[in-house]
Amino acid sequence: MTYNQKLSVSVKILIISFRILLGIVFIFSGFVKGIDLMGSAIKFDDYFIAFGLDFLLPVSLPLAIFLVSTEFIIGISLLFGFRTYYGILGILIFMAAFTPITLGLALFNPVSDCGCFGDAIVLTNWQTFWKNVILTVMVLIIFLNRKKFIPAYPVRTEWFILAVIFILFVGFSIHNYRHLPMLDFRPYNAGTNIPEKMYLPENAPVDEYKTILIYEKNGVRKEFSLENFPWQDSTWTFVEQKSILIKEGYQPPIHDFSITTPDGNEITDIVLSDNGYSFILVSSNLAKANKKALQKLDKISLYCDQRGIKFYCLTSSIHSETEQIKTSQQLSFNVFYTDETTLKTIIRSNPGLLLLKEGTILAKWHYNDLPGIEELGKPVLSMVINTARQEHERALVIILIIVLLLGVSVFEITRNLSVKWSGGVVE
Image (tube, rainbow, N blue to C red; front, side):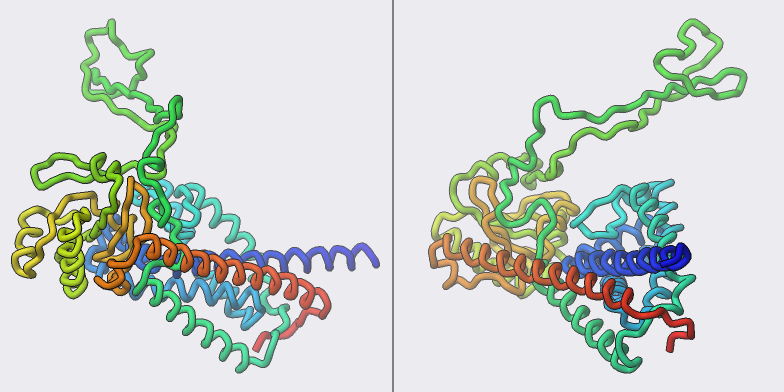
């Protein structure tokens, strides 16, 4: 084999590897966001609020469905070699649109986390930007060679396969929205002991700040540090002091969980240290909560009262609003207050239900899957075992999907290396 032939093979392997790597990245990105579709919609809300586009809030969910499904199908296109030309074009459009946006996020930080990999992998805005820069380089290299890839199947067959996968993935995402996410990447997943995840270890790194002192002289303002400010020069007039975060310290996975009474008294420790079973109704916004579910949860609260089981309702709605809702809907449970973002993180359901014991989340339910009174009469252990079994089954599904994708990756590399690239226009 001549040097040019070796170089050609090396370039071919590199381009094929880039295509498969991009396919896996986009499949993973779309998949983890599709698992937590409500989280993706919430992230759209964050973006719209940060950029003053509040009027777009009603379309957050449809946009989330479209974005994650398109992202997933583009990844399938590249990984499986279905309509590769259009998959590459789709990724190019994605990168052209989002790379400048992530640069803006990195510079001005209106949203702390871009949400590009949901809660599975959390990146800073600068990490996200540089990740996009690297992916853009790979995309451009592939785009310049976009006409060389060999179609896997006839044109109509490939379009049909992509359409079916797209529809199935939309259904998969909506299923996760109407129930709890198939996999829970957030710190409040079943089995979590909340106090343990709130614990701050001794000698843990703390936030480091730089203090800036601003003085003015002859109409000119100048910044000084604590070491060099003009303390002996009375001609300088102090204006203000600023603190800039230069190094972020350790932050426990759960750092913003608190429960307060309508009177403003905090009862977080009382709830988390209770050695009995407690049911917690979680509603980030009680006015927007599903009304039928609230009625069913009220019956559960009455059942708990009769048997001495604690029942709490946590919401971020203001007290006057919660009282009005309780009166209009004839709800009997007591309401306590927690931060809205925290409640949305705890469970992707409004309302949702938790089973708690000594600060450990034993089980979680979406309002579409609330346990009936007859189920509550069974031993609590059976509910916990059932939840654990469902989590195990979901994990097996994810493992099988990962193995399938790895197998397809190997197959695609082998297939592309065994055939000559096309020099013509892709149909």
